[in-house]
Amino acid sequence: MKVPLLDVNAQNLPLEAELTAAFTSVLQSGQFIMGPEVEALEGEIAAMVGAKHGIGCSSGTDAILLALMALNIGPGDEVLVPTFTFFATAGCVARAGATPVFVDACPVCFNIDTKKAAAKVTSRTKAIIPVHLFGQSADMDAVMALAGEHNLFVIEDGAQAIGAKYKGRPVGSIGHFGTYSFFPSKNLGGFGDGGFLSANDDDLAERARILRTHGSKPKYYHKFVGGNFRLDPLQAALLRVKLRRYDDYTKKRQANAAYYTEKLRGLPGVAVADPAHGVHPLGCGAGQARLDSPSAEFPPTHPKGWTPNAKLVLPVPYAHNDHIWNQFTLRVTGDGRRDALKQHLTASKIGCEIYYPVTMDQQECFQYTSDFCRSDCDTAHRLAGEVISIPVYPELSREQQNTVIASITAWLQS
Image 1 (tube, one colour):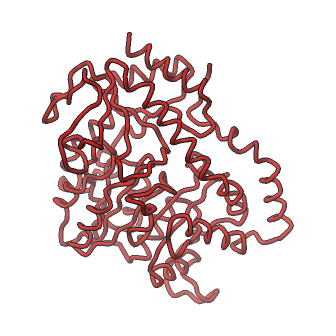
Image 2 (spheres, rainbow, N blue to C red; image 1 turned 60 degrees about the vertical axis):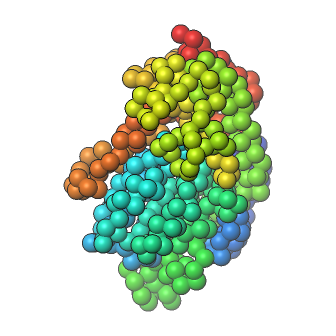
């Protein structure tokens, strides 16, 4: 059975009548820039993410850039960013004229390692951008404590985590700004590019709104040099149709992730970090590390090592996080094993992807940054050689999941 990594038509086509009606409404309105559909979506998303202000943007990337511009971050400034993430986070820092300072990753949740971030704060550091990678929140208590200690701005990159929560609080509502993406592959996927910026501070939100439309208020009177970062009414109208079903989409992703864990965790060679009893010694939080599989320990490069029997490590949410599973990302330990699994799954017609094979500090375009900016990222480098994501989208059937599980089981036994 063929199992795609993502099937957008399985989600969108059942809504064809409603989506067509939304399109027709915008067409007949003649309002193709800003207007009531954008304003309605802004209010609905802001309420969902627990923010006072919502600002529709042309993409998740532009939302990050807009936040940086609103905070007046530019040449001479440094911004702490995770090195294990999608390019847009660091790319926007560079586009703003600031310097990205790359920080290592937590091997359990894949998010920014706040202890290592603290070691990279300098007199030029102006902000930190935690990315809530794969749908799970970063350690926001630690991020906010670090920011408070050094008077830093916090931009939460929630491109993969809209609706995820940290200790009951929606991500994106904790820092100065939250940014989100409506790229078609995201949990709330649109029909092209689209993004969102959230804020609780009135002045910052107003500055961002002005910058979103070329820095003008009123029209033709420019307070700042801004950009064209507006969300289209058509995208807003179509997204509002899907937003009504978003809770259901999330529950299905969570159920699919739980099913993978249930079926895979007992297999020989599979390890699961258990946050309820502490986490990996190099991970976020306190306590002793523990793995559920009795046959697995930590790898030799870690304080407690991992035996060769532990081929796979399953992803887990921390107890204080509501994980929304944009990706279900496995770690495959051992030289060449990850690529071997990818080849095996691909041969079995099972969609899979490597997020991300090259860390930001290793990217050619960032080699101009200092050794300090690119130092001490060993965990992220290891993750880049181990991670692989398998299908977890809401419309995935149990039959399809069982096909994925059977294929992984066969690989483990080979």
